[in-house]
Image 1 (cartoon, rainbow, N blue to C red):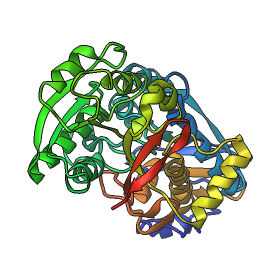
Image 2: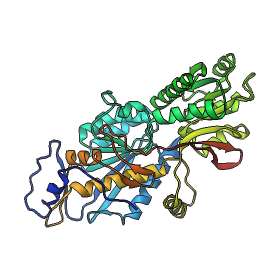
Image 3: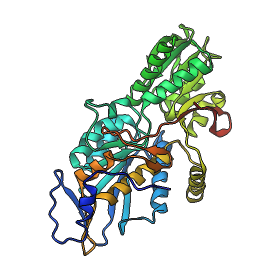
Length: 399
């Protein structure tokens, strides 16, 4: 199902070099030279341990399915896929970025999981010459032209929260008919930006934003924040944060006077089976805005996921990770120089240019076209609702 990328002009010239001996790399940021029989090294930088591990493990599973579907090879070389846990925080992103950036065999990185990790890891990855494709970073800063957080080599198959925040606000205002909203963020780049887009859009539509509060991601007692929010009489609280803080808010909101019947809504960071345990019985009716992927190709992917890992998908960005790998593979195939003895030479800047020139790529998540600053997604956001004892949550609205 995956069409050949419509890639950059120089690809044809590079391909004519296939088979030449003694190729000298003239790429401005260098080349990766892979000897006969040696692997193409693609690494991951994902959260695969701790309270948000389902986010990264789910993405890693998606990549492993993509590798399996393509025979475990790129241009006749086996694929080496390994990586580092990023913790879904800046400290983890820094540590993983430092370690991976020191490995010159890495061609590309799939990650990070969380936008706060990308902010500190990308300077290292970019300097190392890597192509980086995130399946789940959504903060607008990361692909905003001219923003200091937008680095060369960065791409994502995940949506931009300029899209998600607007859809969530439009759902609250137009579909639920609500006019008073409060937000909570946890200080992360992802949560702060997403609640900001939601709040701005809700106000533009004519609603009143009664409060914009913050919590610490390790905070367990939410009483003071929730009591303060209750004083403004909101009809909905939008808190696009992570676990475990999200679970504490779900539980404690229902025992806060004035919030017993307020709508509670999170985002893709709270699309996880861990929310079922963290929220307890109070998870009933809790909503999240998250991507929606549908169709027969996706159904076949889910069946293979079940077969390989013994479970249905455990988070929401598995298909985006699948597409991240497929984009990287197609870009490598378009620019690599294959020598007579099987040596593979991958020019790093040419690979970045090929990624940036991606147009109308037939992906599992939609029709993917990359902007110069790295947005490649075909974004489609829906609203899901949790029911106690049932996972995944139910789709209740789609634009």
